[in-house]
Length: 359
Ligand code: ATP
Image (cartoon, rainbow, N blue to C red; front, side):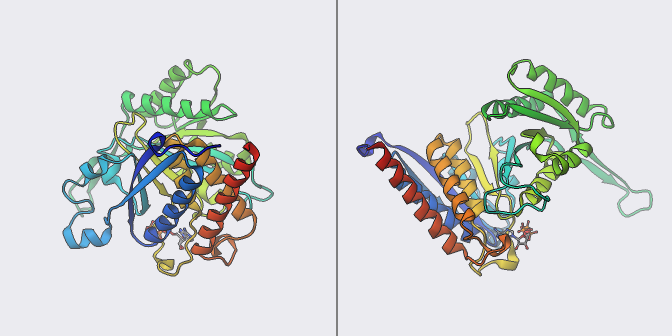
């Protein structure tokens, strides 16, 4: 294969916001593997720009994102975020679909007895713009024994339909073509019933996708007892928030899994981050597990259309886990740097092997 001329190469511009705690450590590891995969692949370039927006910035300026910050982010094709949620970015950028893939990576241990790699491979799609976290409500008679507080869930047909449609598209793109629509429509008789109705309407456009409906409480049992029976899962903001934490725990460690905040219309850059938080207890020690960020980076590459590089990156990460070179949270002794270097080496090896095979 002859190397592509520089002008033919696709370029993706990435905004990096390492933010708090272990964020900077895992994001710099992520950037290192991304640079390695782009160089080895040779068909695309990545450019990175760092934004120093963190809780420290907040303390100094009273804002997480400076004035004009969103316009700066808009110039980029994607955002790679470190730690601590960034709702200040999700809402203005209409990142209405939160996507969380979960699987048991080879070389990692699920707390589920007998469950190994291949027994749990899900994508949870969470409504990310309204629902139970819409912020509607209020408190009257604060502090009085007769105080009243309301927390109103908002479900609009528009938002529910676009999210469910997107979830069906994901289900359709996966080999099993299977989706579970999670609600609580036996008890929440309005918004959730509308979810069920919208799901039935959308399903008509996806005749090749098998659909089933589950109540959220029954779903928790199903995830633990029959993990293999699930594939794509769609649920509301609150329900999917809870289910995805359960999913992360069942997959073995919080240091593994990614989450993507997507604007499926692609009008705004989407944002990719590991699901773990700032982990201040291990910050600065160089022992943070970078695997969640590597998987996050792979999801970002997939969104940018670099499917081959995305698959290679995830496969190489999994190979390194399988070799036993893992951080403490996965029962190993390796540090962040060692895992990062091993994944970079594995990537170079994978591309060298492919190049040899095609010569
Ligand atoms: P936040 O308030 O930012 O969500 P948190 O400490 O409540 O932070 P996490 O940061 O997710 O939540 O951490 C939960 C536990 O998991 C901590 O003990 C932390 O050290 C561990 N942990 C989280 N991420 C990683 C990682 N990448 N590698 C190793 N351990 C991790």
